[in-house]
Amino acid sequence: MNLDDYPDQDGKKVWLSQDEVDQLLDATDDAITDVAFRLAVRCGLRSEEVIGVAPNDVVDTDAGMMLRIWNGAKTGEYRETPIPEALANTITTIADVRDESDDEPIVDVSKRTLRRRISAAAEQLEAETGDAGWQYVGMHDLRRTWATQLRSADVDAMVVLDWGGWNDLDTFLDHYRGTHTPEAQRRERGKVDWL
Image 1: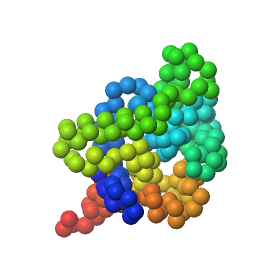
Image 2: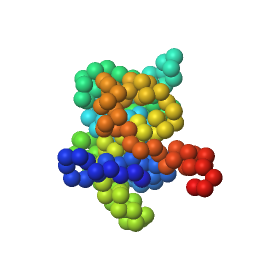
Image 3: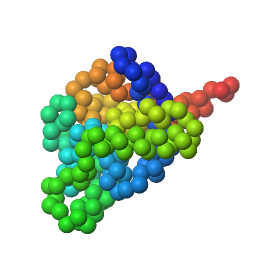
Image 4: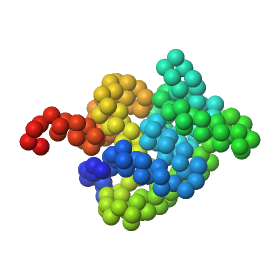
């Protein structure tokens, strides 16, 4: 887990490792919370966007399975971001089980409820692992983690900007890109014999 102080407020920005993402996803106790967390950490959605996703927003394109964000939370602009096939299938399955219209949001909770659910999962993980960093984890840290994991995997920065809905590279670099993931740091350390 990487942490950094906010420059002008209390708390810390957090970037989770892949193992920590897996721990967080394993700490969910219901399908809707799992989908919400996955939409943030696997698709880079903001909380406002998470609660607006409906099954008909998932489309198969020439670029693969994509999630359409009709009204980006900060910009109001349309964008598409990749969605893992398993998550797309889960969204479809939940809609089928509920017997709802394909334009009904899947995550039918408020942003406040999302904040409570991630706080509860983080508190549980802090108790289980003894890592005090979990106390700082919030929904937006999942988006931050997503962006950093993409860059650490050498996904082109301009593609990450497009998928995440950022208008310029400076905003992305200043607010979202963190230090490299632990996986990237291990890979780079492996290049030096004495580390």
